[in-house]
Amino acid sequence: MKFLTQAVLFTLLSVGVHPFSLAQSQSTLTETTDLVKAGTKFVTLLGNQVNVGDKAPNFKVVNDSFAPVELATYSKKTLLISVVPSLDTGVCSIQTKRFNEEVANLPDDIVMLTISNDLPFAQKRFCKAENIDKVKVLSDAVWRDFGQKYGLLIKDMGLLTRAIFIIEPNGTIAYKELVENISNHPDYDMALSTLKALSTPVSQEQKPAIPATLAETTGE
Image 1 (cartoon, rainbow, N blue to C red):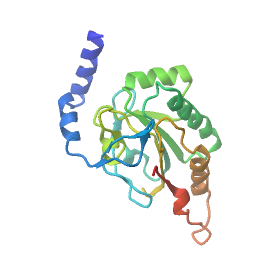
Image 2 (tube, rainbow, N blue to C red; image 1 turned 90 degrees about the horizontal axis):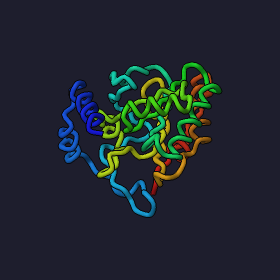
Image 3 (cartoon, helix red, strand yellow; image 1 turned 30 degrees about the vertical axis):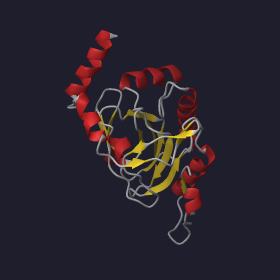
Image 4 (spheres, rainbow, N blue to C red; image 1 turned 90 degrees about the vertical axis):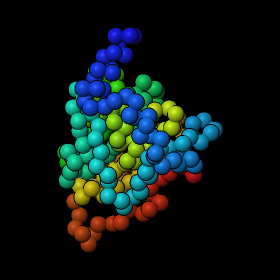
C-alpha cells in the first residue's frame, strides 16, 4: 500500500498537480444542495451547474496513460458523456457496459465517453475485465476539472454524481440528466432516443425541437 500511494503521488506530480491544491481549489466552488440525494439525504454538489442550451464548457481529463484529453478533442461530433461515481460499484458497472453495448447500434459520428474519478489504473483494469472497448473511459481524478465545470463533484466524497450529457457537434448541450439519487440508474431509453434523434440527418425545416421536459431531467 505504501508503494502504491507513492506511485500515485509521483504520477500526480508528474502531470503538474499538487495533491493539496485540489482541496484548496474546492473551497471556493459554488455549492448546490437540493438536486441529488445519497439514500434519503441531499448531497452538496460543487461547481457550476450547466443547462440544456448552454455552450458546453471545455474540460481536461486523462486517459489510462495519464495523457490529457479535452472536450475540444471531439469537436464536430455528437457526444454522449456518461458520468459515474465509481466503476467499482454495481450500478456504475452496468451503466458503463450498457452504453458500451449500444455503440454498435449508433452512427460512426457519435462518440461515447464514461468519466469518473477513479484512477486511470483502476479504469484500465475494469475495462480489461469487462471488455469495455467501444466507450472511451476517462478519469477526472487529476484536476477535477470536469466535475467542477459541470457542477458534479460531491462535497466530502471526492466522487462525481451520476449524470448523462449529450453535446451536439456545435458544442451545445442538448440533453442533461442529473440522476436524483446516486444509487439509481439513469434513463437509458430517453438518452439513447435523444442521441438517435440528433444523429438523424434531416433538413433544417424538418428538424424538431427537443422539448425541454425531455431534454433536461434533474432531481427536485
